[in-house]
Image (cartoon, rainbow, N blue to C red; front, top):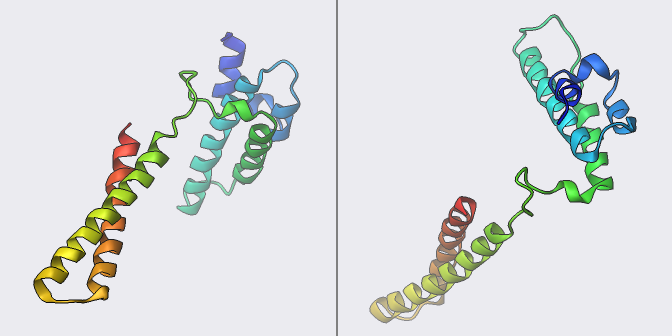
Length: 148
């Protein structure tokens, strides 16, 4: 990455009047545009937060415009949904969540059947334990998938 692009990323408002100007710059690659806009969005979010806490001189944040430009860039360049390492985003988290929910529901239903065997017939117990198992299994699966 050239020093010029690094400076654009570090200080986008020095070089661009509006976030749309980043999209129109033919010198930048799609990835460079993404980095510039993400940097600008971070600055705008900080400014908006400071404004909310009455810590600024009343400057207006560009957060909405930058967010719109990022959405436009990502819709035009779908390959930008790639991690910085260049690896495609993993879908293991979603699969882990669904798998955890299925396992949790089965275990919950099993626990409900055991409870019926002990306490007597009740469809409500099976339904309640199945729902609790579904929720707990989903939480465990989601946490496990996020760690992957």
